[in-house]
Length: 153
Image (tube, rainbow, N blue to C red):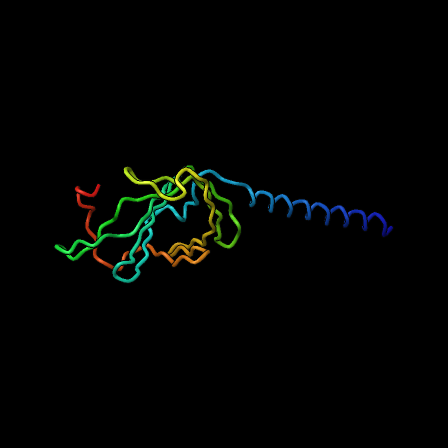
């Protein structure tokens, strides 16, 4: 009599292991675009000459440093560069691997223009933590900003 219960138990364990593998496989799947939690403009509130932004849209990221306008004593966004054709993997616990093709703003070229770059980031509602030595970005700038002057667009 114990043999049928053992087989039922073995089947249940096998099924649960298969379901776990399926869940892990789904998590490792690449998804088109960016995670919804990241779709926003994020700010790095660094020292005077080291303030930056990054904006994530559905399939593209754009970012750069801020310039300083001495007349108004405010910061403005420099033309952005970033990644297009973004895709991501969820690595669990709000950690994502993003990958995209690097592009430059009009009139300039960055070192890896046209190449696929991949990086890892932890995204919560309040901050982005980039792995590999980058600082944390938050949802609100701690400094006064203005629109980019037309001469720089």
